[in-house]
Length: 177
Image (tube, rainbow, N blue to C red; front, side, top):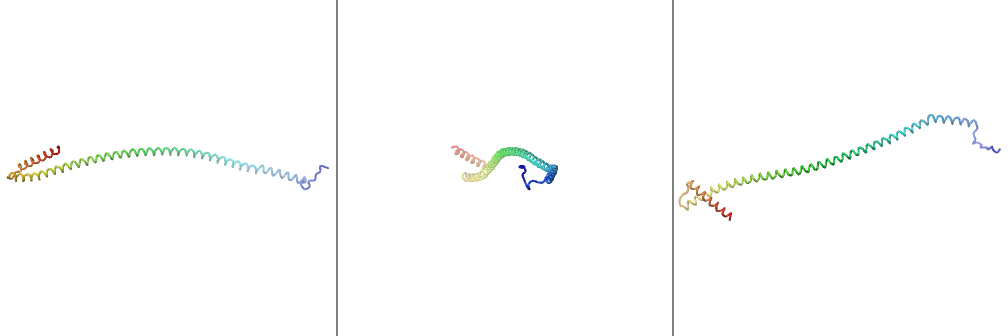
């Protein structure tokens, strides 16, 4: 009787053991038919969602990389365009400066020519006034020296012209010496 080991309250009775075994089988069957497929669906849905999220993230990352490359290309194009515009503005600026210089020189030449013509006109007018005044003075002085009146206009004019010609001859000979 060595084999008889008394486990006492730990060893269930046979009918209790059979009922427990049947209930365990029913419970296992119900779990295998209903609960486990639900868990599998949930796991599959989560796996699909995670996989879809990863695929979406990868596609979004690819799109972002493509957009970044496009923006870099646009930025490079914009920089090139800005450099071209700056160069064009510089050339236009130098062209405008050249045009303005030329216009200023033309205006200066025009003003100088106008001033010269005005000076020549004023000089001619001053010479005419001097001839008249010097002529009158020379005629009255010559009349006093000669002792006769030189009121004759033709004679007075000849005298005045001769006097002025002498003055001009003196001034040119003095200017050359």
